Structure formats: C-alpha cells, structure tokens
Length: 156
Image (cartoon, rainbow, N blue to C red; front, side):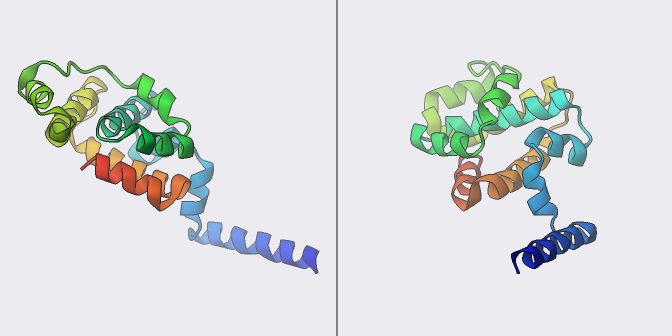
C-alpha cells in the first residue's frame, strides 16, 4: 500500500513538472541567484549584487527582529548583501534627504539607492522591479506569507 502511494506521488509530481504545474515548487529547489540569472538573463555577479542591494534596502526599513525572520527563512541573504555594490548614502539629493528624515524616508532613498546600485552592476533602473518581483516570489515560496509580507512592506 505504501509503495503504491509513493509510486503514485512520484508519477503525479513528474506529470505536474512536465506540464509546468509544479514550477513554483521546483523553484524552491533552485537558489535565488540561479532563478534570477535564468529568468532575467543576467550574470551571476549581477544577480548577487542586485539581490543584495534589494535586501540591504529592505533591512534599512525593518526592525532587527523582522529582519532576523527573513534571514532565518532565507539564509543566503547575508552573503548576497555583501555582494551588493556600495552606494554613497550621504551625498546627493536623495541621500541627504534620507539622512534628515531617518528611516521613515526610506522609500524615496531606497529607490534612488537601488537604481544607483543597479547602474553600477550594468543594469537599467527597470530591472529593479523585475528583481523585486522574483525576490518576493522566492520569499513566498521559501519563507511563506510572513517573510514575503515583511519584505514587501519594507520595499514599498
């Protein structure tokens, strides 16, 4: 009986993958950098740096406890953040504005910082939203609603 259930389960998963139904579940087995490089046709360095920049921006708009939930569910976040290009947060209109406003001004400064970081990686500003969509989907699949919602709120 158990053997029949295992065979049926294996055949069901094989069928779903062949039909493209199980792509979200399959995505959980792939790491985030692989998904970004495959879906957006970017290099590994661009994928790592772009994802790291997004996680850096999110971390600036989250409490330590909330960010710990993200890093617990997505352990690669810390290494990706180290791969992000550095941006000069204290200069320019948006950087100065954000330092005067504190974390509450994060939305404007985060977007400007992300655009700058992506530019350093050789990526256009339009890629920021594409990266975010994939990262949020990955967070949903890997960490569930709580992690995805924490990131989504921090990136707004």
